[in-house]
Amino acid sequence: MSLETTETGSAVSIPSPDELNLFKALFSFRIRDGHSPKENFLTEALVYALRKNPTAMREWVKLLTDGAISARSVEINTRLTHIDDENYSSIFPDVHVSGCDTREKTFNLVVEHKWDSPCSLPQLKRYAKLKGAGEGRFLAFVCVSAQEKKAADKFPKAEFDGLSYKTVLWRDVYRILFAINPKDRMLEELLSFMKKEGLGPGKAITTQEMQAFLVSRGFKRQLDRYCQRLLNEYDWGSVPAKFHYSPKVTDAWGRTAIVFSESSWKPAIAIGFLYDPADHGGQLLKPEEGIDLAIRIHADPAANPSPTEALELLDQRAAELRRQGAVVQTKNQPENNNKHTLILIRKSLGDVISDAATEDEQIEAIYGQLEKWCLILFADPKLLNALATLRPYR
Image (cartoon, rainbow, N blue to C red):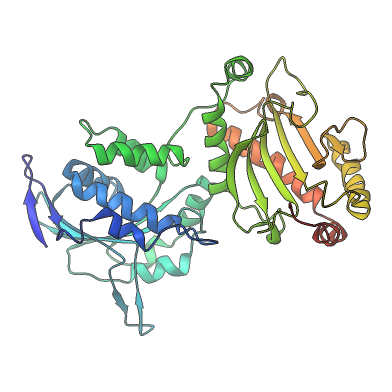
């Protein structure tokens, strides 16, 4: 690799044309059936954008080193092989950065990215022991959620002499890249991708926006963002593992939701926001205030005309959910006008987030309510057995 110096005097590594081909870099991480390596995909996209923009590279290094390094020259690699002498094995940090700062001092920075997997303290400890050839040693952990950041902050910094450790959120990375002006096209597209995937900062939902949404339909992007953050940042262990085949955020049938299912969709569980209940065969709980928070289990009525055992068990769960303040309809009730719906659990979103002022507080309140419903809903293992007997959509 060679170094290209910019007008500001900083430099970044310039890989060969083959190395600089984004499509080649991303191809091995392409989405395949049952396989979605989000972290590696995001890493390659970010590093490519940084290589193309020296200012972005410099600000990113500064963020991850807590301002200690203002890079003058940089070499950056993904999945670079390192030898763990203690365990006689190879390790592959997501990103390895080496270079010189503006005072001509050398540094090494190891970066670990997380998107849809949890923090691993043993993994960070292995990375912390990598010596590298530099006067300054830095380790950075980048994750999606505040909960993961708290877990990563437990990393024992004092255990490793001479190592500087920093944890940041992806939305912090977004902020420093967004502040760069002018932006090249690649950086603009990376930021657009991050925002769409819920990795950028956002604003809280207001009652006025919910009311306006019911008229204008201009609100769904924010609902999508909230669902992306709920999916990316929170543990959905309260939803049985058999439904974690490939959870994804979808907008259909008047709702924006995370859809959990088996590969054959028998049944599916939609967890999120109901903004137009016409398809579901009902009305919003408080249409004058806004939309509903909802969980819906649905299955093919043609393939499952009378799932008696599942419905009896769902009725039992519904009774406990109502005692906890939820509005619940099951398939065998007259007010349930959608033949696909086995159970629909709802609460006005305004009531759920009434005490939350910021986006983070709102998402925390929303997740807390949804998790509580899921824990009640799936508390009886007999229900899971009954759901397992349902036939898939034809």
